[in-house]
Image (cartoon, rainbow, N blue to C red; front, side, top):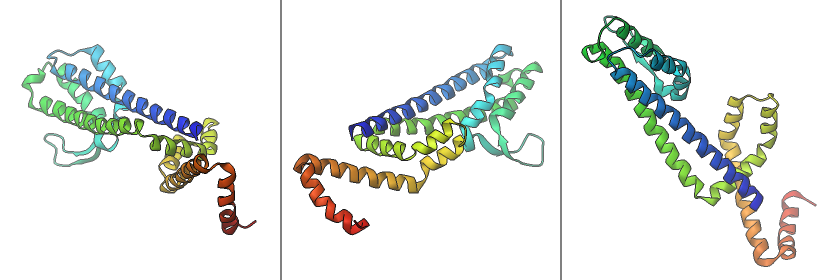
Length: 218
């Protein structure tokens, strides 16, 4: 039981650290974006960093980074528009046309839309971080995570050997059936451990033996 709980704790801690690393990346991108947008001159080095990381941040934002967008002076709406990836070059184009950011209404609109998306996502990920901190203080979560890790060990092995994709592994991890089985196994394991500690192994075997035979046969 201690081994399973230890595995669960390490998995919970790893998930928390990964989430914190993602939050730091979004925060850094947001800070650099504000610096780039507020600079009246074009900062090529800063723009290179933002563009270099634009696909990564767009992927991190997921659905929150995609919207229906109507460009200025255009009569149609673009659906599933990737805001950061597409609006960042527009900001660069306006700056290199020698039009100051603070004097351009379209400039301000582009920058504000991007910044709103980033701030909104930071709020979401901060909520996830708080939930992850709560899980780090809950031994029952560690137990459930440990049981789930053991149940999914074959899937992890297949993933390590490249036979199972990350998306498929993530789907298995979030599967309600897997979570339900993990919960049942964790509860049964916890109760068995408590009974064993209270009455001893021999007495536990004497109690469980008939129940096992009735349920599954000799």
